[in-house]
Length: 116
DNA sequence: AGCCTGACCTAGG
DNA sequence: TCCTAGGCCAGGC
Image 1 (cartoon, helix red, strand yellow):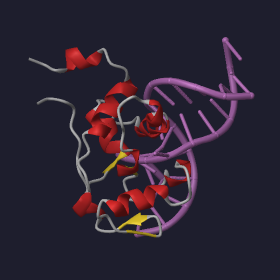
Image 2 (image 1 turned 90 degrees about the horizontal axis):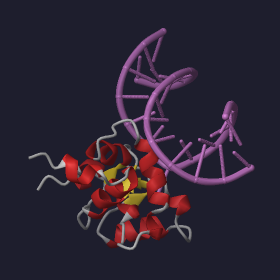
Image 3 (image 1 turned 45 degrees about the vertical axis):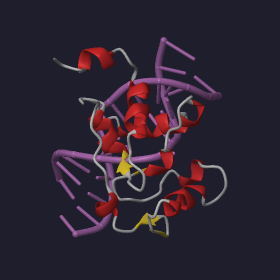
Image 4 (image 1 turned 90 degrees about the vertical axis):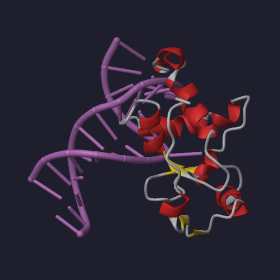
């Protein structure tokens, strides 16, 4: 049975948050990857915006684990403080140099819509 | 109500 | 191979 029906009622943001919460500790993913996971391949920009509102969500959303496809911390400027995002990632064992995640492909985690 | 912007990505020249 | 343009959905002015 298709799971899409159940979750389809949830708005784009809700899906994004759900997927974002599934990002394992010490892993990172990209906006576009999440966009695909929620069924909106071209709406990568929206994902970033959803992350902007992530802090308003009841459940914690690891927005710091979401970067662009290059592995660059493009959203770090939107975090409180200066290197908050980088510090959070480094705290999880991810090396970040000059806003660039090292071994990005190694830490990359491809999300998938809740089909479990 | 219309135009512009935004934590991006893919495609075409 | 680098650069330019368009698309995506929602919110602000």
